[in-house]
Image 1 (cartoon, one colour):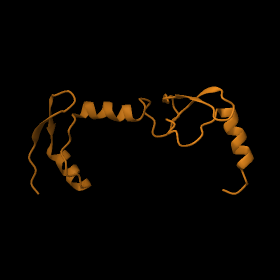
Image 2: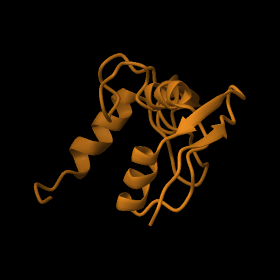
Image 3: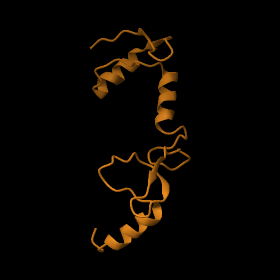
Image 4: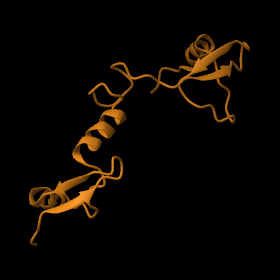
Length: 110
């Protein structure tokens, strides 16, 4: 396949950027069928946002701020926060009651 350098427009910042022959070859080698939509600078920003801006990969460590959601504990009625959005179809517990529930149901088999 013969590639030619092309100019694309970034969907984020609306600037033109080069889609070089080397980049096109890399995309073809990886099996990518779509052209890049973002310029290299906007791609870097997007990657950093997905990583929580810390440069680390995955997980919630390294300073990434979790979004917390307010709940009322299903067992003791205490107000608390949890790092997930409760769906409403299962009881949600504060950390103390969750620890009690977990220790009482732990049968030693994993």
